[in-house]
Length: 181
Image (cartoon, rainbow, N blue to C red; front, side, top):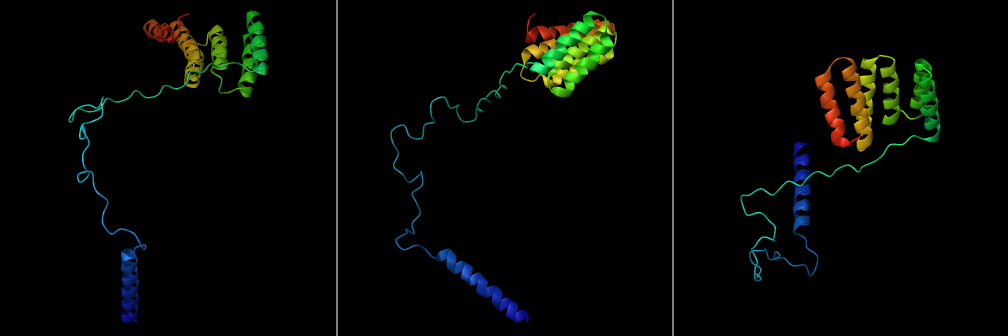
């Protein structure tokens, strides 16, 4: 039985080696000329212009910047934000927050809504929640410098409300670098 297996294995190996030797009729058996055997043209062997000399690393290109975008409110959320602002102006902060939470159920990834809710929480003297809303907005505001700046301003206000003035100044600096008021 072992001998039979060994013979089958040898037959398969010889068939495979025969396939690798077979060439199409008319195909060349000589290798293509390499770059070293080709005749050189004038200036050959010189690197293209702008290529750093050997031993000097090529400059690393800057990573592509994400396209700038601007967040906007949809019609339904814009109406809810308007309603919440009216409620807040009347001192009804809890109903205003509930209205904004309804808007967030419609557009949970919109940083502008998180900023609005953070402002309401700040008006309710809840600086810790306002800061959380600002950080959530900042995480969502990728690509929109205006929304990022508004997020940093909310964070700065919440830090200032907790007496963390040095950190608030740093947050204000980041907001100003993104978008002056």
